[in-house]
Amino acid sequence: MQTNLADWIKDTPEGREADAILRKCVHCGFCLATCPTYSLLGDELDSPRGRIYLMKQAFEGGPVTVRTQVHLDRCLTCRACETTCPSGVNYGRLVDIGRGVVEKKVPRPAGEAAWRRLLRFAFLSGPLFGFGVALGRVFRPLLPASLARQVPPKRAAGTWPAPRHARRMLVLDGCVQPTLAPDINAATARVLDRLGISLVSAPGAGCCGAIEHHLNAQDAALDRIRRQIDAWWPLVEAGAEAIVITASGCGTMVQDYAHLLAGDAAYAKKAERITALAKDVGQVVAAERAALAGILGTLAPVAEPIAYHAPCSLQHGLKQKGIVESVLREAGFTLAPVPDAHLCCGSAGTYSLLQPELSGRLLAAKVAALESGRPAELCTSNIGCLLHIESGASKPMSHWIELLDRRLAQAKAAA
Ligand code: SF4
Ligand code: SF4
Image 1: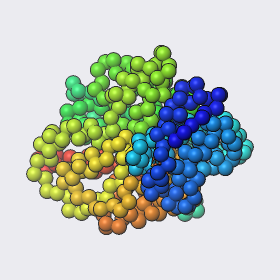
Image 2: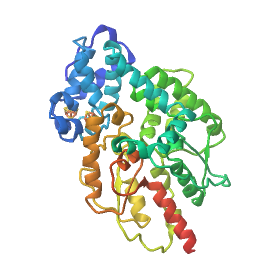
Image 3: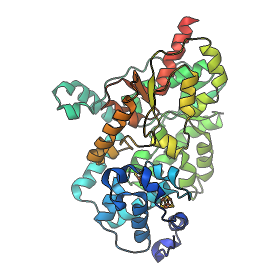
């Protein structure tokens, strides 16, 4: 694609990056076939290629309007288009730059801006968020069904083993996960403990920065990333082998730390090290598969099939397709087939709250696909997908590491 970026952006780091990405696009349109919003709306401007044109227009100094913003807002940032693109167009990075540009040029209506600020505040408020969720659970029976479905049931964390192994790994705590699903990281700690690794949490660490990043508050996201690095750094220097991430959405964010802070002299090297250490929990367990097989021994396979939802952040963002599935199969689970497994469930960070209509349609399709193979239960790798799918599913929903935790507990009981 020929480009001619406007003077105000062409010599900036974002401008140079956007230009290189745009030039790779050959307008072939292959990406349209796997774009969820294009398949729902059938409008070229709600496709990757259409959005690329809109962003090119913005970077070249053409008109940037509310219409531009609407079409970029509707994008899930699922990055299915990246997986499909034969030219290697880094759409995810391009849309980050494009949204930042459009956000500065098109002020949002007061109500919409306030809703976005409220979401940032609510998700990042820690104890206040916990109080709100507790209140929601108390009044759940009085809420309309559509709202009650959004309030997740309480999940017991269970025990977190005390550190006892020479091998140590850090865990990413996340912002809402400790309140909504404390069982996920606790189950991870139990599984890794059985595999000879102690999982520890760094005081002062929390959100990876994705919430602010999703809501186009780029500077606030960078500040949060720097604080996260500061919190982890003493334990990294003390020899932590890896940073284990149980929410693949957060994994894609931490994977980008090195890139996002490349121009920050004080943090660039540290950010590179953090990105290199970050691992999805699937990768971590897969690397220990020999020890896992030894523990599971001759335990009988699980009788009923399960269905696994591979989050977009895992398959298209982190490019780790198939790892979790292979670990689950080796652990004795049978995976029910899931049609259109490449498609987004509609959770996509804050998307389900900002685009409820489109998100609801994607959720209905995803639940139908997951339950089509008659599984006994469902599982995934990301807290956002988990809660979103759970709100519409008729089967129990968990993080896959919880299923493995249960399996290891069975093996222990059978030993
Ligand atoms: S598949 Fe890639 S090269 Fe083709 S239109 Fe889409 S982004 Fe451009
Ligand atoms: S990121 Fe997803 S929703 Fe956005 S253009 Fe690409 S395929 Fe479509």
